[in-house]
Image (cartoon, rainbow, N blue to C red; front, side):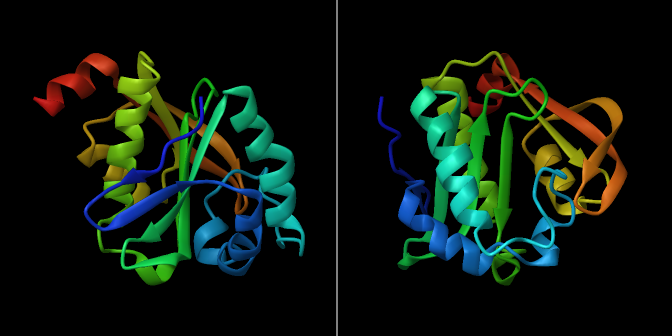
Length: 181
């Protein structure tokens, strides 16, 4: 099933394509973006990092039906990639995202997560959504709280910044549905 385009009042979420790698490579390699991400992200970011991710990880996962990935673009500027949001079949890390710091503090990621959460629970009919994040990533933690997620585990995570205290957050499908009413 092809991945649909999604929309919010301000955003276009376009399914990831191979030609997005160029724009990702221009925006993504910023310390503010990567410092709390998984240590799977190479740092310093190599010149072909975005191409390798899109070609070798994201697109094969999308083709296999285990990964769903959208680029984020303002409706007013649909040609400009400002971030990425993804869903994946990983036990405790089923959603990931990043946003160009120039767009932080505007509620855009909350909008993006709302529509991908709807896709996760309504289209894919998953029983729960779990995300693991570094405790120091306050913006991401606040977003999970606003979404009605609850902390279900404390652990350590290997991040780009090193091994750091982290938390796993969860919302069940039933909890999510109750919040939609």
